[in-house]
Image 1 (tube, protein in one colour):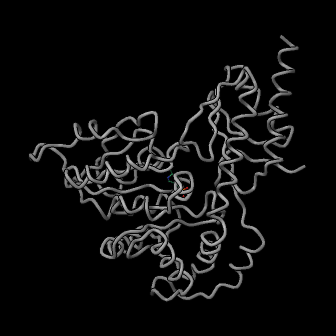
Image 2 (cartoon, rainbow, N blue to C red):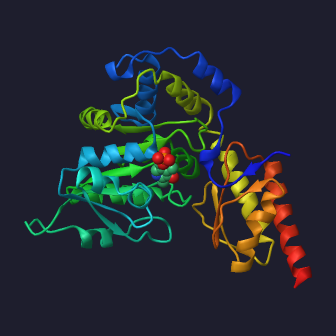
Image 3 (spheres, rainbow, N blue to C red):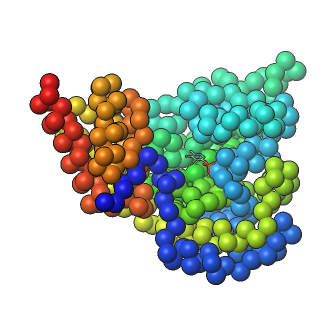
Length: 343
Ligand SMILES: *Cc1c(COP(=O)(O)O)cnc(C)c1O
């Protein structure tokens, strides 16, 4: 039986063609700048996002950290969402390694940061305060693609306030597809963008930081200091090139599957589904505590993996098909039908 893994889009495995591109990659020493495949991937990403330059790193945690370290000095501050990956899920790296103070604020329901609230948190130019330097947004955030007019407002706000603005674009291609624009249009509103190759794009490893050449040069120094300088990394970069060439457009299938899942689970009375206009490849489903405690194991016995918790995040990706979604919906219906019989 095929295992259907809805825990995250990081679980995707490289396909045969991707593995073969990796095996055949031309390589060199990337710390010397001599790996042709890494160089090609960096140029490709920079072109796709409309930046001068890009830097390949091992993870999105590292590219976000490189952005923080490159934009901010010791004692500077960045404004960020309370639930943002950069703030909450990256071990506090900016504070630990850069002495950069985070100023988290709550995301709005549509995953934006309210700009009036951001403004109220910008510190006065006075020696009592950390110097506010950077705003970080996330797109997609909780699977929501940020509205394009919001991005334009955020960019002009940052400019007016003389702040830099970074995008954690781990899933920027999901956002671009949802908003029916190129990733470059989204990226045009930011000073730097981090993107992940290892989520829905299906590469085993890797992220890119894209920005102007000056910032990337600074980031390259920090990457080395963090122990992130890799040598014949072209083997990994080849997977990234394959991912950018073949797996960006197909993210639409994941969005369709997430919609199907939303509709299917929506037919079950015991499940409360969040329905969002901005939804991409994530479905958030709320259950009673009893159901939440039992459902993961029930599904696991049927070859379906979900993460636990009162509110479930179900993520579609390239290893989940339309038929798999149908199987998941049937299994969930079975679970709740069985429970009502017991009660
Ligand atoms: C996955 C993810 C990252 C990077 O995570 P890594 O596992 O370090 O690659 C960054 N931001 C968001 C929003 C993510 O989902």
